[in-house]
Length: 340
Ligand SMILES: [Zn+2]
Image (cartoon, rainbow, N blue to C red; front, side, top):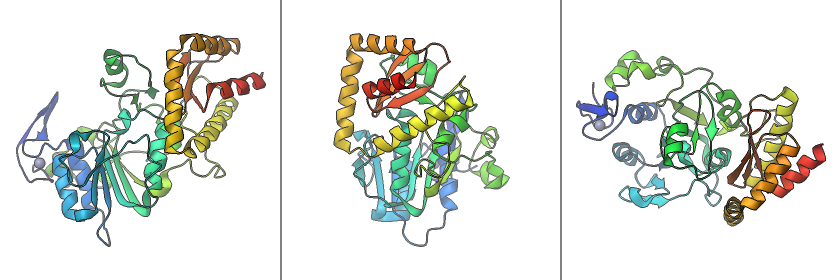
């Protein structure tokens, strides 16, 4: 067994995962799997690469590959050591020009992003070149999608999302209804369709991660795998997670969500900041919250309001739960009233 990134043959434990961390470069099994995918990519010219939340060893390999075409990025300046570092906020990507990158790479990032994840994914695919590849590792854990941007405390975040700074969980049982509405997911994950047993073993990718969605699964996405861009494509649109609704109710909310997304994506970064401020104000106003809750109860709906790129959690009642983003709550309530 040899780290395919730095060549070291020594591995140490990572929490309860035995012998998965490279002692020299710090790569984890998911980092090495990412690099296995990258090694199989054929670029016809020097690729432009965006590496988000860069891993040290991997960043050196990518810099070797792309030179000054390599860009590392994160919202946190703690990655400033990395070559060609730029501070980027994944909730504000409007300013980056379209068709900029041949390769976008990130691992265990999307569970941290405090906005509608469809927004971030939309822009990551927008800035991808037509023949580009978006490689991302998403921790698929637990059963169902869950998300919360409110102040619920570290303990509750850890309980619901597995870590104190996560805002969502990508559960495995309702993937087709949550993330699968936004990007095209593989029907099944089987690393043996991409790599040989020998390659996986040599790179120390434990066999438990070879099949099925897991915390180590690498999604290899093409630009067209973002599903929400064409409202006329017939795709069921929306970053919505629904449970306990009939098909026609689901269709109704998907249509609303799609409309919201189109509005949201048309916003400039400045407007987005304005909306975030509105959300803060709303969250701080318990009186208004009570009003919205009462309104929602009147209509016997179970609602989590999401506003702009954040949301206000309001009521859970009759029908399980679903996520509904509305650009402004008032507008949403008007529509709800009109639905009676
Ligand atoms: Zn290594």
